[in-house]
Image (cartoon, rainbow, N blue to C red):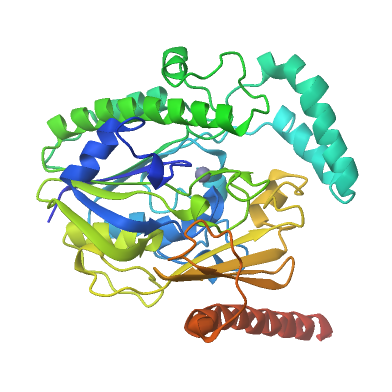
Length: 442
Ligand SMILES: [Zn+2]
């Protein structure tokens, strides 16, 4: 049983960038602690990953993925019920009270100061007016980057709290606690997310070109900025965890990412739009700290496993039918992994929303995408094209050769069919009730 549990999430961190060159500190932790060799996110971008990380549920277990449903059990609520002080320090707009990420946290600090007049809102409003005409939208985007973005660049601020500030604030807050207190603490780093803005010295180390912040970059240049940002986070992580370990010698840490990042591995796909290829899903899953053995776990694990694992380490036995994950330390078999998301016609999950309220409701995100994989095979069903993609991961780990359906995919396809069917049934039932209510002569 442990008194202090720390969940650290690093936005956009792909597991293949946890290397000696880019993240030497995190790599050393992975070598010392328990590392999941096959750890995956259950969604490709921040908001739909939260049901998995915080609630141990799949993204489409709820109608629109986000915001998080109100009364559900979640990682913090269970810790809180067992007498833990629950503390959250988040840095992204999608990890705010607005999206209900504060549920279960006694102390929660986020970036929630959205002004309706911000450039963010103006851009989204224009985008929402133009998106129906794809060519016009694309043209407007080109004009924006070619002529406008450079001019307003100086005014565009980094829309998240920087890593230095978040660790400083979190450590200051933790001053009043010590090892005798029971603490569950979550901290999120956003610095590898675009617009990336690593300190100059880090950028130079990775041979990035200065002065390109916020501009559209070549893939190669973008990777240099990504690596520099991760290297910066790695240094912060070292400072942060060293201090925490001095103060809480029994601390246990789970370090992971909400999703990966695409660099054109699939033509035209960059950043983290709503696709389910593994460059967007394969992330680190590292457990380290007091009494955590040096071990490599070869079973398939995913974000839904985080909460049950940490509860277990804290000596909390918690059972609930809705919990999808399992303690990674006691896994005995591979189960197929599920990843899901929602998106709009132009693949953005939220870009068509005219306001944060719509965005929060996922109001315009009408398309669903499902994936299921084991170590050998993978299927993706994409509602936008109403088509399945089949991959042989042994021969084609990069998911480049889409195969025809064969019986080897039968078992995985059934999982996707069942999940789709359940959603359709649920929707029919909701529609039936709504119609019946509308017919009532009240
Ligand atoms: Zn994210």
